[in-house]
Image (tube, rainbow, N blue to C red):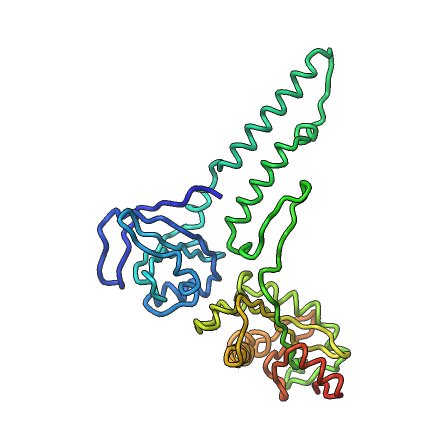
Length: 343
């Protein structure tokens, strides 16, 4: 949306040497990441990191500057400037305190589209006022100033700038169609996995399985908790934690949720694909999701539990005794054959 951010900083190489002082660094991309991921990146900058892998094509050096990616902790606001030179770790890096404020300050100026919109709006208002000066008294509705094809075109250009500025809008394209902005969200193919879900109620001394009808009452609450989970990136979901380059090249995002199917609550994993998966990729993806559910991300929902009013419930995405990930087609076939999951 605005000109690229330019910073004069000293980039540290492998944490034990320095580039020339006052080296010009151009920020090619600003990437917000979860605070926990930011802490991992900054505490072990020489370790391969999936965020760097995903954005390393925007990191390089030429005779004029170092072209970097600025990773920003979504809540805390500090930044980590990285130029990996094609590697998957922070080969050159620098910690940038209050990076979010710096970025906001540099973006506060008017962009080309904003300036054009202001100019056209000023001209339109002047025209309306001058047209009405012959009247002794006049009142011009403010929305009349926006009734202009030229202003609509400026608004569309500004919308395109805003969309292009946000990494989370990477799968959106804006096109003009009879002055209506349409969104093209068909860039990715979608794959869904269905899996059995374990829902236990805390009885103080022990855990007891919730009745299927009772478990269904928790569906909306569980999905809201997933949406609010700070460990789940709004851009890529569980794929933020994937270090398998083969998968990150083919899988854009992985998001869990729960749904009612066949009068029971099941886990649903929605996967957006950049490229088709072969048999080996599919197996690797299932293994990754299973590990996230049973050992990584899923621990927060089962071991720690969630408070639902006065109740404490434990949601086991990977804790069911008969856990398996089935594609939606496999699930449908199993239902036709009467092989429904047992909770």
